[in-house]
Image (tube, rainbow, N blue to C red):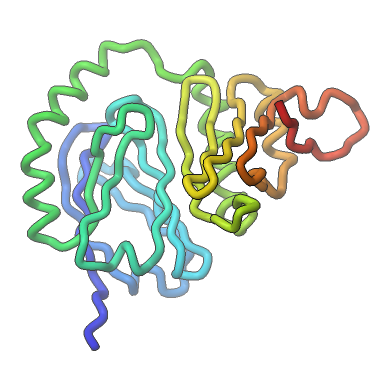
Length: 227
């Protein structure tokens, strides 16, 4: 039985716009929980973290909406014979590819001119997030919660999707269609997520975690607030 130990990443740098190829090896994570992928210009274009080398979280800076998207993959998915897509949660546009060398290069070449044109268009747009500093910090907190295995749905699904909007994150379970909203607009929103240790989506439910969850001074951790 042959086990693939290498896969290819093709991704455009959101800083300089250059498309580069990077080899990802299973052995890169030996004794490490975090791997940073650098563009040739020096910009960190991708951060990959893993607690057990079975599940991997990819933080992808987006060249389209100038935000960061989080994608999760199992080790079996990353090192397989199929191509995995990195995409913008807001627009659905493809940002990069991970998979077999020939297929990844073909897809990246086909998308190169389109992505360059889109990047030029979005440079003229106003800043996407209402408060980008708070949004990035909330994303980091969410990633830490997920990395500890504390982000999941009551239905048993741990592959929770994250959609990013100018003022909030929407967590979605594709198995039971439950939704949890995390606001990321004010210092109060950031304070709330920093006090949260576990996020459990309610089966088939809709909940909201925001600054209204902790309006008292009891010192208690905020709970999920049902709407």
